[in-house]
Amino acid sequence: MTAPETPRSRPTAVTHEVTNQPPPLTGHDVADDAVLLEGVRREGAGWHVDELHRFGRYAGSEEAQRWADQANRHEPELRTHDRFGHRVDEVEFHPAYHALMDASVGAGLAGAAWADGRPGAHVARAGGFMLATALEQGHLCPVSMTYAVVPALRRSPDLAKTYEPLLTGRVYEPGLRTPTAKRGLLAGMGMTEKQGGTDVRANTTTAVEQPDGTWRLRGHKWFTSAPMNDLFLVLAQSPAGLSCFLVPRVLPDGSRNTFRIQRLKDKLGNRSNASSEPEFDDTVAWLVGDEGRGVRTIIDMVTMTRLDCVLGSAGGIRAALAQAVHHARHRAVFGALLVDQPLMQNVLADLSLESEAASTLALRLAGAADRAHRGDAGERAFLRLATAIGKYWVCKRQPVAVAEALECLGGNGYDEASGMPRLYREAPLNGIWEGSGNVNALDMLRALTREPESLEALRSEIEASAGADARLDAAWRELRAELSRPEDAQVRARRVVERAALVLQGSLLVRHAPNAVADAFCASRLAGDQGLAFGTLPPGTDFAALLERTPV
Image (cartoon, rainbow, N blue to C red; front, side):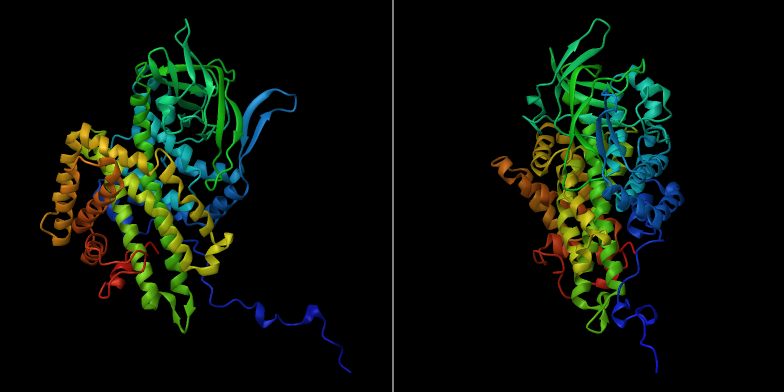
């Protein structure tokens, strides 16, 4: 008589066999992306391509992706006091966060571009920033602010002489210590307060000058990210009006400056990054720029962080597209791979078109920033207007594009293990950070009225493609008519900035993208041959040519 089979000896149940599932999207080079590499070369940083591939292999590695997951699952923790009761106001991070920071700072994504004399240095940095965004967005907040602080700090040459060499280094050295004793520094900013938000002129934080030339601040900031950074630009009311100040966490003598962290924000996304409410009470600070001109001073920093918002949103869209295409190339439904089915091809091609337009505009802005900082007045004028346009539109498109890409994965995309929920939670951030949609639409109006040279620069950029596509030419004529109408300007501002973004993207794609891409963009985005959702491109669109431009 045969003994009954024990559970240990039974063969694996057929229901446990895994079939028709895509392999993990790991072990690849995220920089193996024609759209990214073409843009980087076009904007003057072809010399950086080998380094982008190195960083791209890191970003696509299983280890780096595990760090990204861990940094968001194990969130920062606030420690206000030590065990003896001393106030310390420190935030503790998971080791994975520090690993991500070390890699991004080491790759020059913080302030290093300002110390690099090569043309295209800011474009090289932009390409790396987009790759890092595809990996994990939260840790890039302190990286971005460190990049952006340099031009503002230069308004006070003595402070810049002391701190800029450390802000532009490639060494990540966490922990609160005397700034000049460290090998590398990170910077942040404190602008908004609970009673005013975007209306920073309503700030109530006060600044009182001291006999030794320093100032003392008292007040409460509402949303200050990365409180473990070394230095912060802070707005406060001085006798001459709203002014900008440099606040170090640790003073030159090694003592802790008063920077009381009241709480960390419980945010929708960006969970790996700590955002805080600090309180200043007799906090030591140094004036940056002219007293009473604080907004003018700190706007130099805001402008650069807005550029990073565009780069980050373009990178986020591209990361979501890569996941959707990878899934569709390995998942079979109704007897055929998803990627071979016409309706899915339409969706993926439409997402690819949106992504290429976003990335091309983002890298064009990075090129303009690079040339503007090297003295090109025309590029500076273009950047002034085009940054507001790009910040509005590309950041607006990220949430809807990521949502559509998530849907391509179905229920698998709704599972945290896929990484798509984290991409989705990150998607609204750039549309809010450094000015929401209305702020940027109104900023466009201010640029048009106060800096007419910016409109001339935009005109020159768009008309570089004149005659190449009748639909683009018609859209530009209509946009010019809208721009010339002063009545109801605020009511129409979103409509105008949206149209300006599409016309600008169309001009760039007509000049630089394959014909199939430019034709599909002009047909769908400018001539209106498209529905209201992704996947509604017209019959006859060359889906295969568009899908060749995807990042995987």
